[in-house]
Image (cartoon, rainbow, N blue to C red; front, side, top):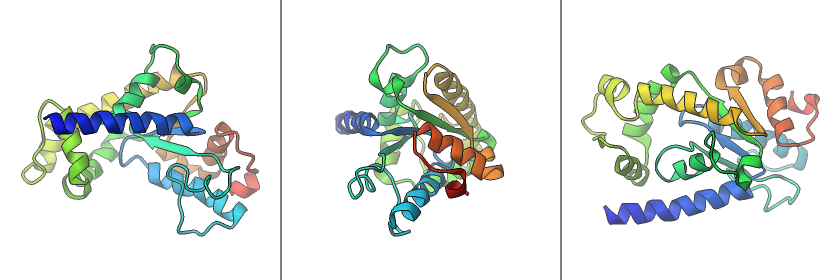
Length: 212
């Protein structure tokens, strides 16, 4: 499909540009807590600068208002156009500017991702994003007919792919000079310690008391 291929190419350019502008690049599979983490980081800046609670950092929303606030970029680094960022950060990839940025991989138990991912892909994913993923995989998924068990066990984006995704990004992060792997489970169990380590990776000067 030429139309989808062209859209994928254009979105890939935008995704790479967004990653280059960011002070912290967050990598995580959908349903791994990426939005939750961005909300936690946003809250630190909301409290410090009096920004309304309704506003969240997705990329540069806060930086446009307060130049001292860093830009963020979050991507799965895998599906369709987002995989172009993943290629630049892959273990053994040629040296490039992105590889020297602070990069956080938010890992999560793939079994816990799988069912939520099924509901996300079949019920809440935008038609445009779904079209891009179906164009990218070998066996497109009909969201109207696929059953949960079939999706989780046998689809191209089911549990086996989720396990490989987690393992691949663990290897990628280990090969980056400023890479850090954080588990969703640790962020839930020890939010202060884990979030403090993340803001330290960003080189943001938040005290443990502010994080708490």
